[in-house]
Image 1 (tube, chains in turn yellow, red):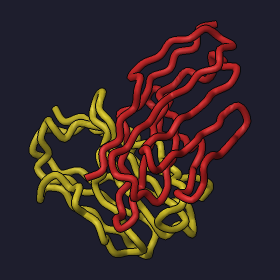
Image 2 (cartoon, rainbow over the protein chains, first blue to last red; image 1 turned 60 degrees about the horizontal axis):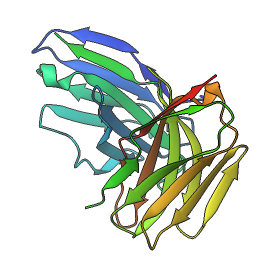
Image 3 (cartoon, one colour; image 1 turned 180 degrees about the vertical axis):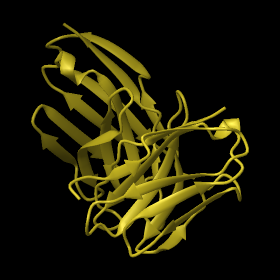
Image 4 (cartoon, rainbow over the protein chains, first blue to last red; image 1 turned 90 degrees about the vertical axis):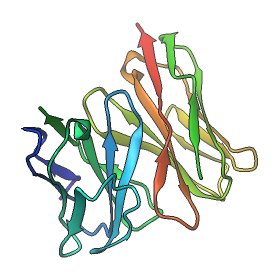
Amino acid sequence: GAGVSQSPSNKVTEKGKDVELRCDPISGHTALYWYRQSLGQGLEFLIYFQGNSAPDKSGLPSDRFSAERTGGSVSTLTIQRTQQEDSAVYLCASSLEWGYGYTFGSGTRLTVV
Amino acid sequence: KQEVTQIPAALSVPEGENLVLNCSFTDSAIYNLQWFRQDPGKGLTSLLLIQSSQREQTSGRLNASLDKSSGRSTLYIAASQPGDSATYLCAVTNTGGFKTIFGAGTRLFVKA
């Protein structure tokens, strides 16, 4: 597509529920990144995909967080048993390859109540 | 561990003024440095990317410089306009790693 698309744009969920966040990168971009931005905070790295593999998942905060990428394209970030501290904007970015400039999506605002 | 710091945290200037935003990083083994702007409630827009072998990049009224040895980058905005009001983020990608580390940003307000 023309840009990086994320869905949903907003998600309100009850504490303890599972959520799935989707990222559709720019067509042909092999590198994909997930970041988290909490209120008033900077961007926190979560995971990096090259193709379908994740050479760096060091930023995932706990084992409740997982991500996958299929077909070298769409990626899904799953948060199990959500907690209030998971409330944040989750941003996805893609680039042609690692080391190239990033294009960000508009993000998914997650609110856990 | 790479750390990225941006000073000032916030800046308010009158329209038409030239201004400089600062970014410093602790590990000089970088692959590239990017500047982004973020408008409230929105994602990030890429402004400039400087490769480690480059000293500066220019786009319109924006000029970014890079001094790897001193661990510094500056973003110069000429003839500022109210539409430049946003948060500006500096981001560093290291060699030998995959993640890009972001600074906390400088919130810019340009008064008409």
